[in-house]
Image (tube, rainbow, N blue to C red; front, side, top):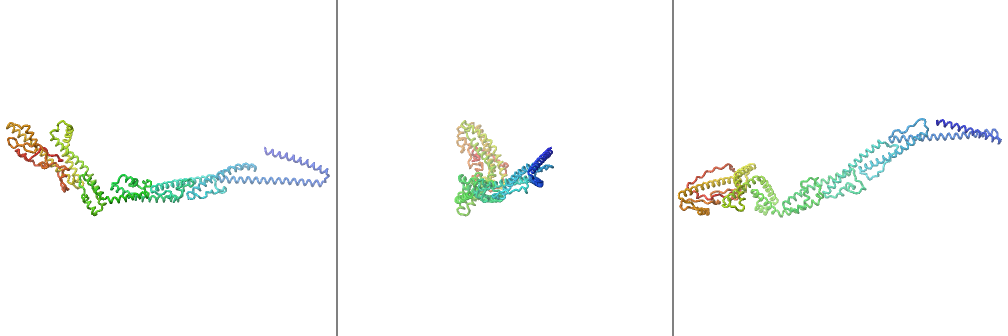
Length: 602
């Protein structure tokens, strides 16, 4: 419809123009006629007018043709540029050329699309440039060239791939480099921290140490970033290896020095104040290298101070060695005394004094020998612990038995006095304990035999074989019991004879006379009839009495000064004794004295 209107307008315009031209031509001819122009002149002027019209049309046609060609070239150029941009950006074809459309319509259609693609290209180029800049920067940091010119290389749109696929590839590469950078930075920080710890323990200058690898490792400002290149990592690793090796050497050196220092402390009985000065270095004993992290513990100054202290104590030790030898010997004798074993005579004080003064033996060797003897004495004391506890229980029972005998001889024991009830209770307990003594002795003999079998050596108590003491104690106790039994029989016979005498003569001994007998415990008293009978008064046995005393380890060891060479075992079975014949007359009692034997402890 619009085209038909245009054709109609052009026709009207041509018709109007034709009418105007005819009118002008008629007017021109009238003017020529009035002028009196000839026909030839008129024809010439008409031809000239026609030529001028043709020239105008031809010029307009040429202008129109040129405009068409230019417009066509413009559309083609923009379409080509649009196609190139779409190909570069990886876009699908957003423009389709329709048939039977004018060039101006095509130009109007492609222009906005082209402008949009140009904007997108610029944005894509900037995005590419930013990613490439980061990639190049991180790559330079990894390569150790962070200070180089980070100019971004220009990206030409005609020969560069600006598609999203390519952009994603660059982004993936950037993420990989960023992760590598992060890992390297973390590794550098770990290395730096480890170097700082090692330098602190060794007393080494940290800044000077890491500056040998790279200056950025010890700078605290943010102007220069931490170097993460391979050379930095390798340098830090090498520094750590060197520091660890040095740390191991110093630990071994300090451990040996501290062990010597600790031995000298114990040897010299150093005060707590002296030990406290070097208390921090004691942690190197029994510690692993990686566990030692105390600041300055392995510094050269600390090692020198410790070595100086060892040297000082060593010199002091040389001057006090004789005193130390006698002191350790006293400790040995004290251990042996508590365990009732004989100390080694090879290091007796008189011998050691003579050897030290004569210079025949080194004091250190002599002291070491005493230390060995002390250790052996402690081991033997521990092995004797169970038997010694049983010996102490047995001795305590013997002491209670002795107390009970003294208590039974006390004429005033039942008087209501201060503490009488306590003595009664103790007497009851003592009687129960005394009944257990034979079982204690037999059990102790069995334990001693087992100890001797296990170690293939006799059990000596203050130099005397314990089994011999126990067997003699059993024999003495048995004799004591026999003596008590005979004394009881004697008393019964004496009472019987007195009863017969009273029946024969009809008289009794007066209480006063009886008391006079008790007032003379060690004399024999004859009655007025002169029949020779006497009444023995109760008394304690002396060392020279007919009844042997009970020998405990305490009393026995006082009577024997040398080591017992006896290895014979005595049987723990009851001993067989031949019964002594009884005398028919009272004269047989004259050789027997006392009523109760002495206690086992004498």
